Length: 166
View 1 (tube, rainbow, N blue to C red):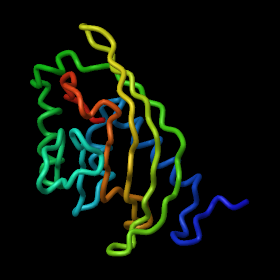
View 2: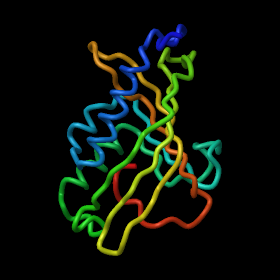
View 3: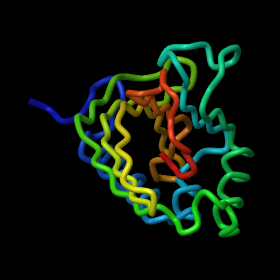
View 4: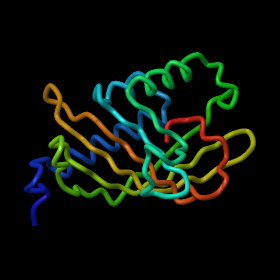
């Protein structure tokens, strides 16, 4: 049994370590480190209602290009996002990591993973769960994200304020 997907050449263990680091940066509010993981052409997408909706014509919970990701991070750093005062305590588990193949248009490696995220706030504890889809590429010898889709299990229902990195 091999841990390398032949179509991509990326080692599964390397991919897992990248995903775990990305999750830790988000959980620990390490916004600069998290932002540095993105490529210049990045897309961060959390669909609403339908995991496979056309993101260009359908409503999304989050639909950020690279500039909007940078704006979101600047807002978090101000400490004045009232929904995050004090900041949520976050911990997530990332599991079932799979290398899915190569994106023909870009050569990026597509990766899937499940997650469970616990958010603790003064109002109580919120459980979030879903499926991540990443597109990863090597930039200057390091893995970077060009795409992250977060398909929430409950994306067809009214959701609590999502004011953190999911």
